[in-house]
Length: 147
Image (cartoon, rainbow, N blue to C red; front, side):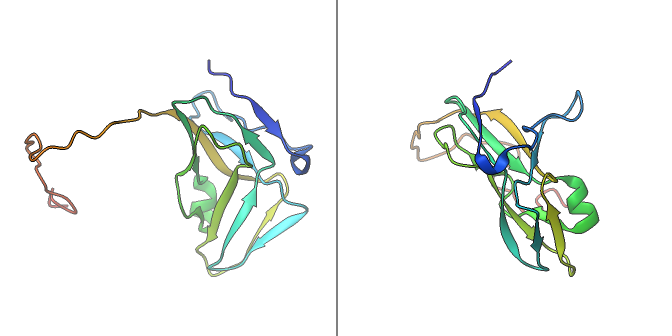
């Protein structure tokens, strides 16, 4: 199991560290480190602090994703989902949350506001060529399958 250093920031004191809420969960729940509460006005985007920073090893990224319950029940999402936390970033994990509904929404301290998925990635080198290898699909996109 990968061990990742995590730092709890002063405004994150008393909140749980990100955690898996079931044995099959891919994402760790992230908690709002707001003071009291934060209202996301209708059709507005805000930054929500989590009160933590992490040190991912090279070759890994953190993917910040929305919670399905917030999306379905309240039309609250993360506009740049998935947001990427690079292995060399040491700042606070923040969520760029948008209220897509017609009603204001209150986030309270300690609310679960997002998920963090840790994933491996590969770095590449470009190999410029005049032609790409053919596939059955070719350049078909944006509805190429007829659906």
